[in-house]
Length: 111
Image (cartoon, rainbow, N blue to C red):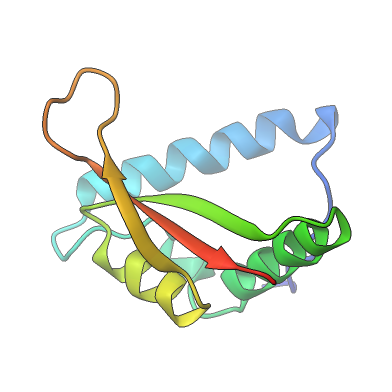
């Protein structure tokens, strides 16, 4: 598999991006192990690290003091991944239509 290259999406990427998102959600629904948001063929290739590094570089370029993200409570693997990149839990929230929390809010201070 070719190495992934991180770049901004263009309108020409819309169909491929939508297809990839649909495939990832379908994979989650088929998972018999704890769910993950990464497709098996793409795991372990440094894509999350590259995306987070690019996001952090852009946040620093803009002079931001912190980065905040949301991760589904069901995705413990992703929570551990983000914690490994310096994100810490700062709260919880619920997606529309849910009474109980469905996601964890995590933050990384950049200052």
